[in-house]
Length: 232
Image (cartoon, rainbow, N blue to C red; front, side):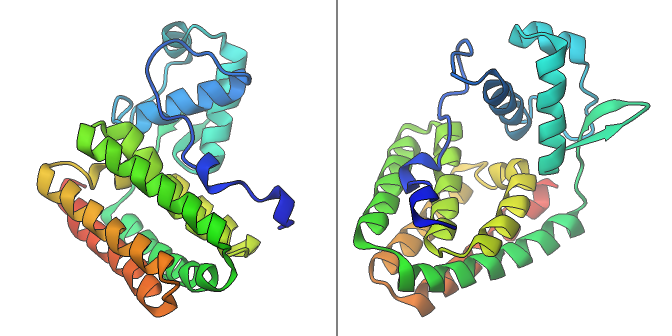
């Protein structure tokens, strides 16, 4: 990836406020973000068939842009499209999730090593800023903005690897597991444990300790499975 085209870490957390009227430059992006958030928060539960007419009325958009947004979300792997049922929120088996987390841990560990080699000091500071904002949301118990910053940190570390194939593969799996990863923060003990993992991750990145960062990222995925498996 060309360096000038690499997103800044601060841009990777996405839209942090799922509430209020849609007011974004791109209607497509706005609809995608809103429906994705509804899936992450469980408003649209796994297995739910999406009624385009009702959802369009709720969001205040017509069927055509909504349908295009649903196609995009299907390409991310969080919806399934079928001729008979239309769009359905995808259901994952525990094995699907566990297998995906194993692969994510390997990809993130590899990315962490590369990030320690290739990231500039300024880029690492941007990840620290994301982390500090995430901690602010944790302190406020503002869960969805916290989660988006959390996922933004993982994406930022992948971007610091400067390895486009690695980013691509990671993006596919991370996108599919958004809802699953979100439930890993349910309950104060699980949430505190996830925050502690991130404290270790950011400390290792700032120290440019490749072994420690790779280990912390892989262990974070292993513990993510422990935190979510009972809720599947």
